[in-house]
Length: 103
Image (cartoon, rainbow, N blue to C red):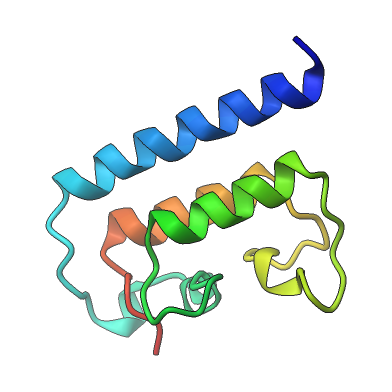
């Protein structure tokens, strides 16, 4: 199994686990001041909600070894200049905290 395929498999398992967590949580909205600032940027697919679809989109970009450019900049949720697992983790944190609707 190539390293890209291994990475893709790991990322898909991660997204599946995130989905289980999201399904088990009550997704009420918390006060905006309680959410980390990056949660406002975590709606990567711009559908109005932060959910597993956003983490899956970032995971696919990681598997494809995307770099930050004008089109992919929104996937760099933590704005560190790299699209990586930390961006997926940031989205998961927003989901866990119930910060699922951007302002």
